[in-house]
Image (spheres, rainbow, N blue to C red):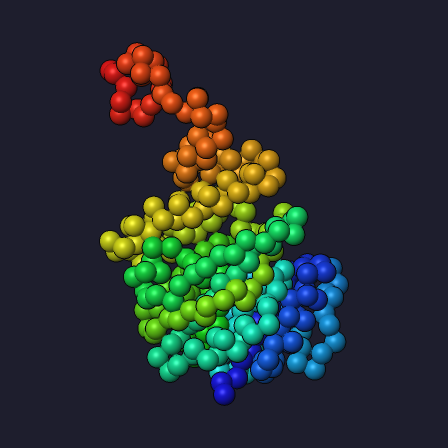
Length: 292
């Protein structure tokens, strides 16, 4: 059986880290090792005492540098990534190891979004191929397991990016090997105020840099897809936090989505456009229908 090293980058993760580590060491089969990369934390790490766990400390250099350190230190044939604030559900490694055939370089799975209220919403992904992955990143880092040899070959994660760096890595791997996807929900992704994935401006800029490096007709479609992905995410964050900044980014990235959401919340009698008002061109109806 192929051996697996688990890499958990950590910077001041608080109490979340213990849950992440426990969810990794309780997998069957056991991983070869669980590497916690302490990226210059200024707070003590709460790490369960377990023989499989090794803590590696480094100066603060960012999450990509921490993951790359883990890849270099790993001894397993495969490397599975787990963010310090996420958790794995039972059976995650077993389901993915079974799919890592020689021609497969990267395997993903489905995940739950765990909101601050505790409610969960399932999200899916796909195995697909390089051209499909260009249209949008559907592989959350905590869902990914990849061949260490391929991770080293592509240079790991781009340390110059603060967002979408994992998308670039998955694309680099997909150009060299096949992808697969484990059915079933195996990861819990926590949504909270400290998540990096609520900085939509940087997410958008990072996605554009990745697509530029893989520019093609499909990549251009991915520009629109990035807005379709991050726009609804920003709107969901606005609904949860009522912070106007999230709503502004939702409008910028996916204005059509926001308009559709607003229309759904209007009383039915207000949704119907007034034909007289439309003929006056006073703003009712689409711009294309207004009179000059």
